[in-house]
Image (tube, rainbow, N blue to C red):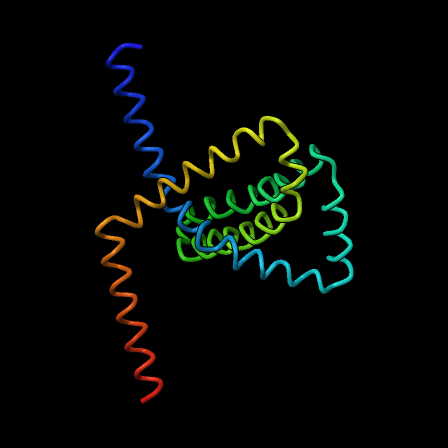
Amino acid sequence: MTPLLRALRALLRIVGTVLLVPLLLFEEWGWVPLAALAARLSRLPFWARLEDRLRQLPPWGALLAFFVPVVLLLPVKVLALFLFSRGHAATALTVLVLAKLVGTAIVARIFQLVERPLMRIPWFARWYPRWKAWKDRVLTVVRQSRPWRIVRAIKGRIARGWRRFREG
């Protein structure tokens, strides 16, 4: 590989990583609490049966179930783009945020239910740990960055001030 191609590849990797960081941060923040919220739905008989069926899926069925919410939310995201194009930025942003919240909750819960069969798919079992390790390295770098530490410190001060205000 020529030096120019290596440099271009490195640049694309950096740009891709920077573009993915906000999504990674959202997923990291929302994955566990949103999955727990979705798990509450299993109190409903229909939902409990659906979760039981998901747990029993074979590996390729589990993969399909994992990607169905992604495909189903695609038209919602297209709707948001349409709304943006028509000048309805606030509505479009609301639709996108809600789609991301609902999508993350559902995908996280489905992943919890089908992780074991997914790991029986050779390529998934090979690539998922690599993806997770890469994501963890990127998030570690972000969390160690000066802007992140500043925002966390400000957030801590606001939270302490709010607690004092409520108690006093």
